[in-house]
Length: 239
Image 1 (cartoon, rainbow, N blue to C red):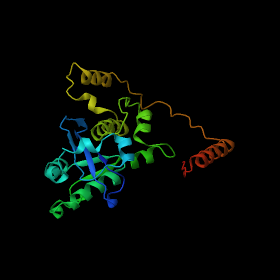
Image 2: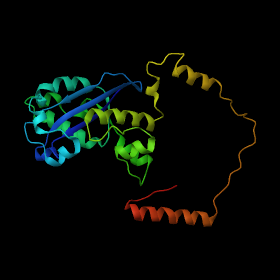
Image 3: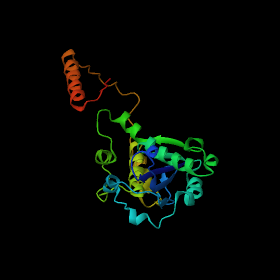
Image 4: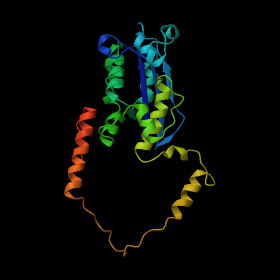
């Protein structure tokens, strides 16, 4: 299974207002393992980058002057993502910009839209389902899953994709990329040894005793969730 963790940086927040992509960063996963076959490209947007955007990603107009236009890198980028499952944080933003860039090309109809060639996993939607009522920005998720992003002082497409790859693996069953290139005598061997030493409980053991919450405890629980919902300004669901 080939997955591509993707992020973009842009001149502003809305392609409908003429804003463009200035950086694309992608990290490839095959069978949940980092391959090192990444894609990274800065792009001349043929327009000014907004000051507010520069404060976020630090990419200046002067830096982009000698970079290629999107039309020059479109084929290579399209070939890289085609057929992959894209993993994106707040996918509507990045996919909207990518579709807009392809649409602007003279042969844009040949590319169509991202959904014609790729499936998409939005990790923001995934995080909101797993962590209701909590902050689910990339930085907040790094703190929650103990992913080191101390080197991230500004947004950057490739750096954010690398961080998101770690987060996605952690959110969906563990950082299996750590087994990449590990030999039997290394980490993989240690994991296998630990698995072999697991002692299973007997199927004939007595069933565990179930303890039900009292009516007072249920009422207090409801009050707590109502207070959290009021302070966060969100709808909080609980089972």
